[in-house]
Image (tube, rainbow, N blue to C red; front, side, top):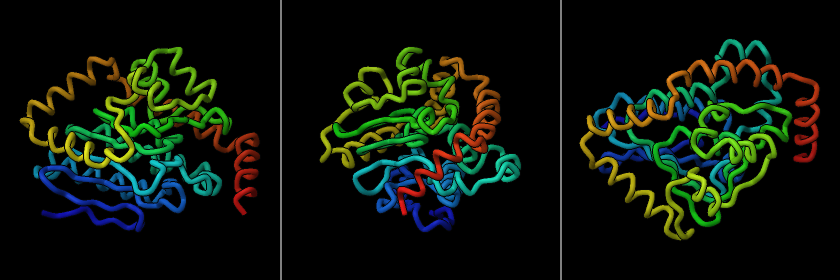
Length: 260
């Protein structure tokens, strides 16, 4: 049983009973994601796609917060050339690897899920969250636009008005609201999250793999997301334009000054 070679030092994997577990382990930085971490996560998703022993990918994180989104320092140090060369950056390469994965994806969320910590959930087949979970996209408050296909997938999943709460108003959703809207599938007591996530992942892994693959394909087609790739490319263009605007830079510089 081989495991993907990881380089960032902040992504861990284990594989048991057909479940490949990807754990984000940068709790001291609220599990904010760097380019190197995205690259590792892409490697894990690619490995899950090509390894027949993997039946389900489970993504979770260490500590009290699921993910603070993209590391602001990485955004601040990006250049237009690097964004153009990388097709929207390592984050979108990771998202595209999730899209390409034709096996079930389960994501377990504890505490705050910010930015891509929320939008990556749209590429999971099931999301389980604890009662303390909260969801906030953050883009509008950074003068940015949605990414990861969220302006297409989120209205289809939770409705246009609820999507506007997250993407335009910048509201934070509590776990109870997220469950009611359909952003998450399960809401469990805080202490039960790890065990319940493992049980659901193993249940998914136990299903007939080809039926699972085809069922997942049909579900995606039923959501009308056939042009997801093209939609993401349009988002990348606008996201990159905003990322290098004076308005965004001023906000990010202010954020970085507060951290010093």
